[in-house]
Length: 234
Ligand code: CA
Figure (tube, rainbow, N blue to C red):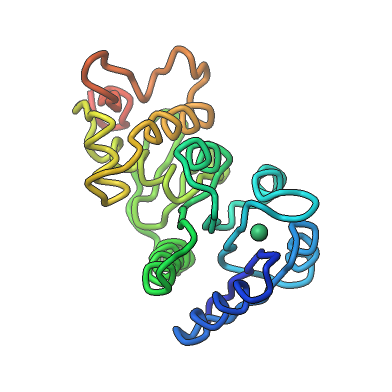
């Protein structure tokens, strides 16, 4: 299946440049010059990923992302000219999957888009992988989904990967640094991002996120998935 990307970018030259890089890699795309136009494009066609500019006329990229996440878990890569960790943390908190700063290397951009597409499209394959059960939940490590009482719970790719890493290694505490290196695959970065993700996952799986039962905080050490919650374990 051919992937289709929606590029939300108000600078025409830049939008066309991204489109060109993607087309060289066999990925189709459309350009929307504002967040509002982006929603219109999404109503008309279906996309596998969105690249999102932050500084846009009218609704900005963060507002777009906030609205989008009410109705869709489509992967979003933020393409931002703004520097700074606050932007990244805010974007991730709102449900972005990946960040690339302008000016960007076309190779890095396309590689990151490819990696996200590979993960999200593989979830659509027909095979039913083994799942891991805990509480009312069922997590499919290869299928990239989490269900609660057979209802799908929307998780971004990185939320899923953080949860999967902890669930697959129950009873072991990991520092934010270890989680960051494993899930983001980078040696250096803003590890406070990990805490943001843990909070977001807790909101989706814990009865009371402030008093978590599944993902516990081990002071001075990090986070641990409670082994006793796994079905078939004691
Ligand atoms: Ca812009």
